[in-house]
Length: 329
Image (cartoon, rainbow, N blue to C red):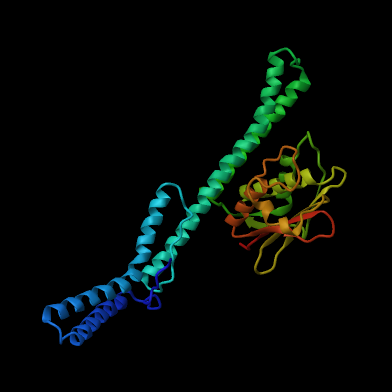
């Protein structure tokens, strides 16, 4: 049961304290005057009791947020971040209660993210480790021969582990803000040619068509971080698109508000509108289960946001198109 807080609408704790003193004195004086026909000691005692009751009623609403915050802080010390404080007061303590609730919500989200990350990483690591262990056990037990096919299977699982660890390290550095940006002006076409060349996977050849207009288009960004973005988008397009159709990389100049617009378009099944924001979250896959870590698009989003840019899925008639918009230099 929540007791009333009659002083909550007031915006100043000092005003509340003054009203508390005034109310106690006035009611005590009125009570003493009304009981003056009694004996002096009984009248004085009645006035003191009335003053204490009024003080208790008014002070309870003034200090209850502090007691609630103390209880919630003790719960947080044991790992319970679900406690919230009733923040109906409009004074300084009410503002503190609002800030406390926001802090509790942030800590709860951070704790949930940490638990989900541990679970997701454990799941992602278990799959290739289990497969690699099975291959090696078969070789050691003599069930399988250490021929080229067996070793290639073991190598594929090792490479998957390496990609996962690399992506986790990249994501950790990006989220921690320890990756400095070194913005330079560069020509877009040679840059994209280099990214496509380095991103080529002999085990999964994918044709890429680059369309840059106008010729000689220049961008202003950190080439290393933007290389990471485009490479991850190409990898995502290759996993979801058909091998027969090339991936289209289109670059265009932006308007006064954006300096460069990059589109990566594949002919895959596309992404439903309700899932377009989720695909940039960690360990979220758009349907491909062929060795992706589920971190590529999350890394791309963080790298783009470091440039104060935007990344998202845009409407297209066929396939999937992810657009990166970078601000002008």
